[in-house]
Image (tube, rainbow, N blue to C red):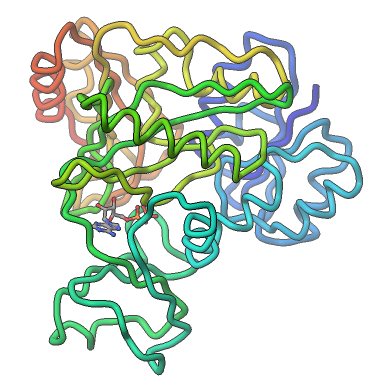
Length: 370
Ligand code: ADP
């Protein structure tokens, strides 16, 4: 089968890596000719935000999918009209692309998500109480385009752009559920992952799986997942990012309609990875077993502050000497502060051991430039 992926980053790379054991041809579209997929797929250099580029790319493919949601949706609609399979479908991508539509979608489908107000510009009256979070309607990524406004003195920091203003949740845990659906209607989720963020870079830092959850919290998540999949009404693999607050109530933060950083530890931690599962969705094959073996975790290898240029992974050999640690690099030659360059998965028999290993490994390795 000819599988086309919009975006040529690490998510696409790991999908292709997993799927090479089957017999398919992967095509990728990305503006950067040195992207992670350029050398491992039939690569087209082009902008996935441009309608014509996406339309041209889709021709002759059996299925077109995404590894980034900021793509030209009009082109995807047109490909669907031409009879080309698009996974996930263009309408759910369109909703998720815009924070305003996404929040309205949750509200409409009674999926719990923090209360919010929409503004088009700073001329609109702000009715939501302090503290609140401003999220740009479009253009936000990896924590950029999100800021907390604590009180009146911070109103001057607000962006004058269409935004969602949302209640600040007193977060106890950030959780993620990865769930897949194929055309036959099978639905299969992975065990819930807990995400521990780096407050400075606002980037995901550790994943820990399985998250330690009460039955009540697990039930809330199950209900959310079911409602989301019904409402989305699309094949695909989705990462539902959740907050558990101090009262044990679960809220949806946002959803990614694609492979996700919070699922990387499934590569070695589960019977099958998110990449295997997504491949099966793209081919409408039986969905894979997602059972977990013990405890698994992941830490991102992120470019250090103050280093830019040709990448060097300092201390990586020390990690390779460890049992139960698995290194994944993304084929990026240039590092920059905060850039995701790779990750390390870790397996352990207990949560305590896992955390200890993750912290130890984090201290061993640094992403710098030569
Ligand atoms: P992005 O799409 O850029 O990843 P998110 O909407 O996930 O942005 O926000 C980034 C981070 O900001 C979240 O992981 C969370 O830590 C914090 N955050 C976002 N929304 C809220 C909220 N309503 N209450 C508290 N913290 C929030």
